[in-house]
Image (cartoon, rainbow, N blue to C red; front, side):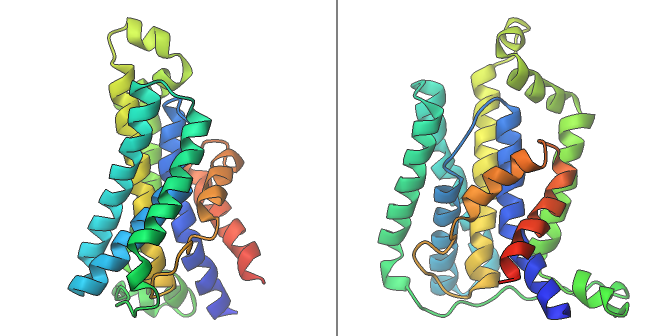
Length: 250
């Protein structure tokens, strides 16, 4: 039972990362359906980095940055060229799926160094709960921290208020002097960053190797989770655990 709970928690992390980033994107008034493609790019770049350098922490950085660069493609087409968001997002997923498979072809099946767990002193000694909650790697802890940071940013800061105002009424926000396109670009980049982190988690923690299409629909689940959580960050962890739990029960 304890091992099942550990699997459920770990399986929820990539979904949680991607959903947290997508929530910010959607709060700015943009719908990016390319989450799956950005996660795959993060996964393949992180895999290649850790295989070639042996440094999983560098792989986290490069995986996250690859998500940002991929999101810039979406941002350029939708915000600068004003293309359809749904069509562009779907194209981005197809692009990310194909490109990740191409550049990762020679790395398929190669062993990858996992991230080392970080045991929280004293707390990890709590019977049962200590093992379940406080013996994870840095990406697990960071995912929950990011949820609280995003919640604080959106609802407790002026910048978060501006972002939500742009999402609700971009015309009024522009009339007040705010750059709608610039702020939306930053939101899209943040979404790419989080999707890249979620993708990096897959080869570095869950399955220590690269495999084409290894996200297995987690990007789409993340999109559904944002709606399921009613666009409220603090509801995302519970939803992610629920979705991964249903999958884990198999």
